[in-house]
Image (cartoon, rainbow, N blue to C red; front, side, top):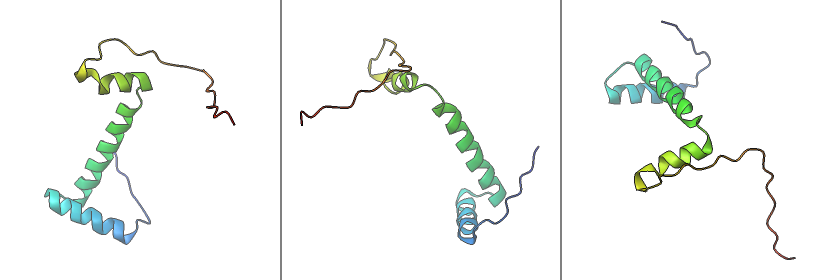
Length: 82
């Protein structure tokens, strides 16, 4: 397993990490591992294309058809007739 050393961590951040670890019943080191795992997993999920993310969000409410993904289209600004 790899090791990571974090230097120059603010005291208030360290204090909050200790508090969170205590609330979860594990060490501060385990708290940091849990936070890092969660962030890395969220980033992998968020890397899906917009259409796929929209489709998955509405999959439980009857969206059965695929949504097209738009690539390279220019967006025209709204005209307010001024």
